[in-house]
Structure formats: structure tokens, C-alpha cells
Length: 317
Image (cartoon, rainbow, N blue to C red; front, side):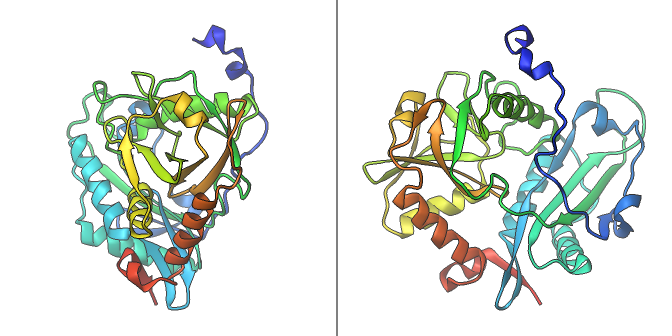
């Protein structure tokens, strides 16, 4: 595989996603300064990838800072931990309170939240037994992950991990090496992002995003089975149906996707990102009317401007 992709072996000197540091990180029940949030080089997860995490956004609203679907994200964090037989040493309610406290402590009005639970320093063995479980919560300011313009994506030569090799419905740290390879290939080929197919050649998802396509005003998205059940994906399906659109979940071929009228990615980091081209095939619309309507409605929801979806927001005052 590497012989057919020599560009992956070339070093890169650019920083695609510069990070804004914040004063404090919550670690194991205490706040520590950003630079002091450290762990041992022999920590188990660093070597074997057995950790779980979430990505959560928070937004400025007229009522205060709003965390988007906090409960659902924390529930998925614990689901992921259960999938790898990890016991997070806190309750869901304690993690939710810690997330709120971390946002308040760092005095940001909007940004990104990263809870992570991982096996800490102990014995070195593939089998993660009798190891401490460390948990951190970090926040930082983060704008549009994929930029503000429609993006070009490349169908990756790497296949999306599948349900016969791992538990793909969980956000497990080690899963994302698959995403790293796809992203490296796409960026070094001149694209903004990758698109991975499943083991049968059907459209799966991006490295960190779910995908939707629109044809003749019908919205299509890959069904569960080869994708992560994204919380933003779930939100967009609910929103689209509430707006009167038909949403169909099923198998999508790369050819069908290329012939779609519109396409877009969804995700916590990506929010809603219009897709203007797939490989060398341009979409009918760079900024499709349905895509942009959904994006506008979604951004109003996360900024607290639609009372109907108020239960999706946890307001911090």
C-alpha cells in the first residue's frame, strides 16, 4: 500500500489546524494548568490506542453559553468505554458537571470540548487489566474545522474500518489512525478532506464526519452499520424531517454520490460543510439550497434562536 502512495512518506512542515490554548484542563477531578496536564510516556493508551473520547461544541447565546447536546455526548462517552470494558471512575452526571465547570473556568464564550478517558501508567501488556483510568476535559476556541468555503473531497484508497474488526459505533482512540491515513492522503493530493468507502465499496463517512447527499430534493445518508452514529447527523435528520424533507438512510454508491445535486458533511467539528467536488467531479451546486437552508437553521438552533430545540442546549449562566 505504501509503495502505491509514496506521497504519504513525505514530511510536512505546515500546521493545518492551529490550536488556541486555554488556562486550565480538568484532570482526574482537579484543574491543572494547560502546560502541566501531563502523563507518563509509558501510559497504556499511548502505545495501544485503548481510550475513548468525545467532541462537543459550545456556543454563545443571548441566554448564556450553550453546550450542544451535552447529555447525548456524555452518554456516548460511557457507551464507548463500556465497549472496551473500561470503567470510567466518575458518573455521567459528574462528567457533565465537570464539563460545565471546565467551560466556565476557562471563560470562553464559544469553542470545542474534548473529554478523554484513557488507561494510564501501569504494566505494559496488550490486555488492559488492572490499570488506572485517567480522565481529562480540555476546551479551546475552534472556528470552522473545514473552513468557511465549500470543500473538495477525495475518495480514499483506505477502506473504513468495519464491524467485523472492531466496534465501529464507539469513539475509540485507536480507530482514528484509519482517519489519519485517509486525511493525509487527501491533503497531500490537494483536497480538503477524504471520503472513506466501506468494505463493500459503498459510501461510509469522512475521517471525522458523516455525509449526506441530496437528489431531487430527497436527502440521503448512509445507514448505520459501517459508520459512527453521529450526534450532529442525528440532529440534521431530525431537523430535515421537521422541515418537511424526506430523509432516506441506505446504501449509496460513489457514482450516485457524484451525480447528486448537493452533498455535505456533518460533525461536531465540521458542523455543516458543503461539498463542491468529489475527486474531479463537480457537484451541481457548490452551495446547494437545501444544504444552506439546513446550515442556517442548524446554526440558529445552536445559538439558541429556536425554542423548539431548546432541550438540545445546556445553558451555562
